[in-house]
Image (tube, rainbow, N blue to C red):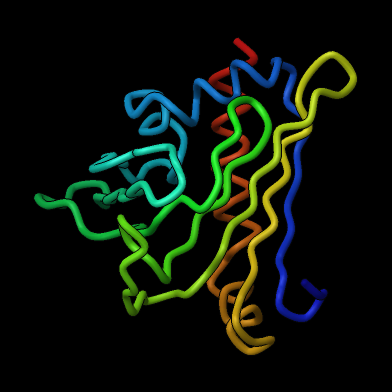
Length: 154
């Protein structure tokens, strides 16, 4: 990993790692925060195990149908600590050609009475990383983290 191909965002959340894990591991909970509002999220599959499927869809406000958002495969799932997924594989390690090739490393570190949630998103090239940044990585992933914090800090 290097600074030219990796985008990182972190946030301290005033909730324990177990609560953050539950927000990730239960589809109905993930749908509440995974995509920035007012876009709606639908979890199609969430199989938290190495080789397990991860698929979400999104629907713009006022749209009739859901559209693809993320299709990928979990590489690692350590409850209450770490999730790793990629969009270059789907369930069962089958290769796919995504619209955006990433590997996301999400860590949930117990810290200061809450959880330091960190997302490191790896890209194949510096150009891909730059494009993701220009698409609004920090704004979008930051808004989703804000929604997660609001959900858990009530």
